[in-house]
Image (cartoon, rainbow, N blue to C red):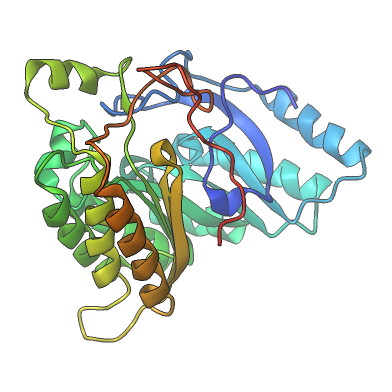
Amino acid sequence: MIYEGQICRSPMERSAFMLPVMVGCSYNRCKFCNLFRHLKYRELPMEQIENELKRVKELNGNPRKIFLGDGNAFGLKAEHILNILERIHAYFPECRCINMDATVTSILKKSEEELQMLHANGVQHLYLGIESGLNDVLEFMTKGNNLTQAEEAIRRLQEHGMIYDAHIMTGVAGKGRGVENAEALADFLNRTHPGNVVNFSMFLHKEVPLYQDILAGSFTPANELENLIEERRLLELLGDSEKGKSCKMNYEGFHDYIQFRVRGILPDDRAKMLAKLDQKILEYGEHTEEYSYVQGECPCLERCEGQKEVWSILDPID
């Protein structure tokens, strides 16, 4: 596969065939993100997409699940996505699950008929960068939407049978606001019922706009211990609906900078996950404050203080 840039997708898609349909991200303005800043956004020609499908077919590939890359593939025009889906089904008629990243705006721009047709043609999971449960944080990070808009987008895609999966970030609200953000996020996620929640502890990257806010004093980062405490509060609350009934969701939390991860099904695995976090918080409390300052391009991030590579391989987790 010819792929420009670094491959980035949810861990739930680790077994999917990744089909590039674009280069970069059509939005690419989130203050904290460095994944696509070195790339010039463009849509890939249909001929190139079909050649990749043909290549996999000739190698006797028969993927049951396909992930469309790169950032925000759902932002493509519905007609173009449907053309891609038609070709996928022509080469792989047994494929019934086609997933991709989306933004709130890209969902809201689609008509009801378009959403219905996209689902009918195989679109199942849309991964949304929810990031924070606080509107002022979303505005500061230039996410391009507020929580009301996010909830409306989620309602629309769920009405048409699609599953929404949430990407969130510990540390995104800054120093002293971790617990506040966790409680607001839990409230939002418990209302909107994502199938999967992926929590990436935020990297403080020296090549993104957020770093200038740190230098100017308009954003004070949380350290890794505070991020762990934020995640613990989130897991205390996540998986309980507003009516007191549990709503199951898969959860994967990543603190790559300090090489720590926690995952399970909420609320079933809550006690086990909290115990693992408690142990790490107890161990980590003995260390000096640590912040996730990194440099380089994902997935080749290095620690700024010593150019030591940051752990980033998706190994199995106990």
